[in-house]
Image 1: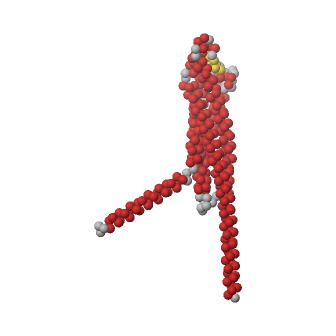
Image 2: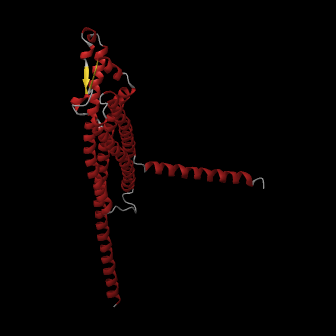
Length: 290
């Protein structure tokens, strides 16, 4: 009995090594099927959309608060601005929800095409529907990329406006301001079309402007607009990345389909020739017996 223990232990160790090797190979196979390019694009897209939507929403709220407190104290003067900001915030909610789902769908499509390419000659078969869906994603991502390019340009507008105001605030603290009257340094938001020309006071000068520059609404909104613009730019880059991936995957699927058809044609001809040879052999044997 004692002599059987070492042999049993060696067999158990061998079984454990084979099991560990099988798990390792399974993990390597799973990691090999991950579409890393689509995964990077998805993370970049989610990050960009989150920055744009989150920072843009808070920045718009801070802008309305700053206008209400310092540039337009009559509610009817900034009612249109409030309505536009609410509409933009609802649009932001829709953009966040849509791109959360769209990013997941594109990632799933990346898994599908990666499996199709890696299993080119296995039992996995691409279909016409799959290729049409890939082509549809290429077109849709192209359209969304152009749309986000417009959003990126639009998000740069408040950055430009706040930058002008930030520069004016810096002029109040510069030595040049001590040589001239501080009250002559003003910011008039009515010239930007944010509020009507009859809004009161409509502009801020001197010490009033200095107080506005030191408020948290101005400082936070300005930097949040910058981050939101950067998020829109990151989303554009992510969609361009998606577009390159989808176009490459579609080309791979198209080539795979052509190779599959050629392989099936060759196999069909070989089978037909084999059947012809067999039938001629049978006919020869029958004639020899007769």
